[in-house]
Image (cartoon, rainbow, N blue to C red; front, side, top):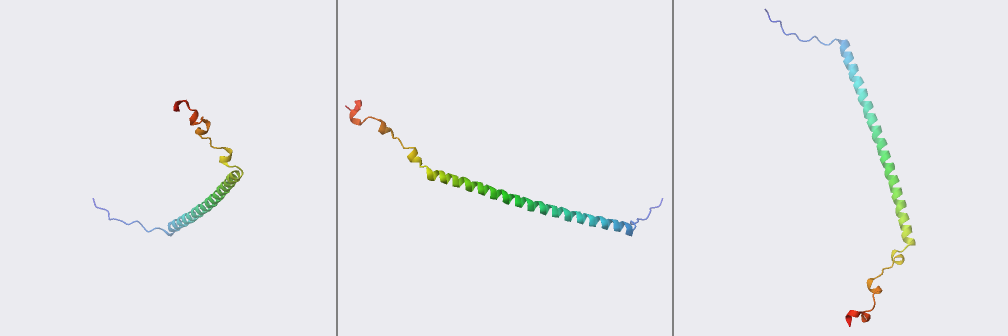
Length: 99
C-alpha cells in the first residue's frame, strides 16, 4: 500500500478562463445597470419630493392669505363684546343685604 503523491489541479484551460472572464464582464455590466437604475430612482424621488413640497407651500400660502382676508373683514371683539357680570347686577345701594 503506497501513498499516492499529492497532485495539484491542472491549470485552467483557456476555454474555461474565457468563460470565467465572460461571466465577470456580464456581472460588471449588470452592476452598472443596477447602479444606473438606482440613480434614476433617486432622481425621480427627489423631483417628486420637490413637487410635493412646492404644492404644500402653495396650499399653506393660500390658507394663510384666506385667514388674513377674514381677519381684515372681521373684528372679534366688535362681533363678540365682553359682558361683565357686574353689569347685569343691581347697584349696591339697592342690595337687601347691605342695609
